[in-house]
Image 1 (tube, rainbow, N blue to C red):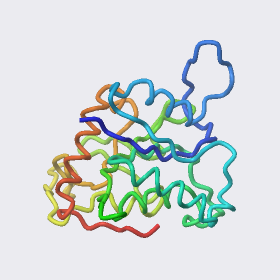
Image 2 (image 1 turned 135 degrees about the horizontal axis):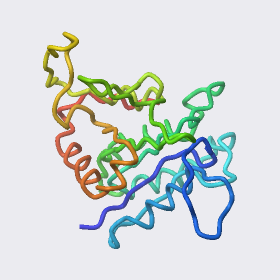
Image 3 (image 1 turned 120 degrees about the vertical axis):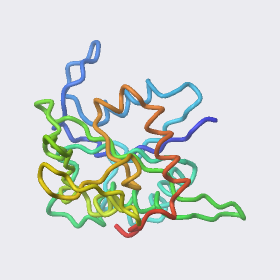
Length: 222
């Protein structure tokens, strides 16, 4: 069955690893990763882009713009959030930025004309920075992979590792408790290098998580 995938991202963030593009010498931005994803989705799947070049959040309160985004998200079943190093504008309230609003709306159940669209499955895909590193968000240690959820927008971090009944084990190396399994987070995090090798697997995975949404404590406010 075809999927409609809404992509939330910081259009102009150029603090990302370069993607070679034939005939193009301009700097790589997150939008180029969106284009790559578009080209590599299954033929029957449909990608719906979020923020457009030139759109300004200062006009976001206008109902026309808000309605346009709502329509895009309402018509999708999966939201892919592309995490990039400088996606956050640190001096601007999170509620006034695109990504938190799009994630918040993706988490809601929406009813129109007797048709209800439930919360989307949500995948957080971390893009490598200019040096090819993911360490600004994820680091691998001998006994655990640690995601720096406090570096993300709050609505992203609050919906990771949020399973009601935790699957934890005590580590004999560091004596801490670690999450196990692949259902620990409603918003499931993955590195771009892994995602690009198994796009359908990860999209199907978050749809499966969405089918068990009651197992998670969701925070729906940006």
